Length: 50
Picture 1 (cartoon, rainbow, N blue to C red):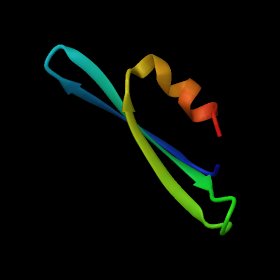
Picture 2 (cartoon, one colour; picture 1 turned 120 degrees about the horizontal axis):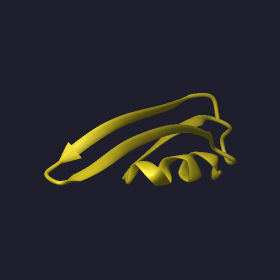
Picture 3 (cartoon, rainbow, N blue to C red; picture 1 turned 135 degrees about the horizontal axis):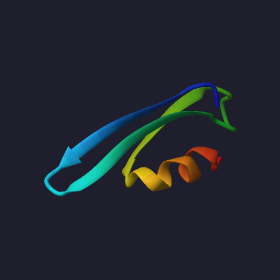
Picture 4 (cartoon, rainbow, N blue to C red; picture 1 turned 180 degrees about the vertical axis):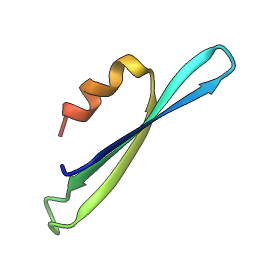
């Protein structure tokens, strides 16, 4: 995992965060970007998972 990017999004009364991480594919060895929109308190757990 080389880089991460986190952006804050606000929709109505909910506060959401869009997190993007770069993961190395086990099949090809190429890097793939995965992104997810979640609550801000769950970002660090999602970033630490493989």
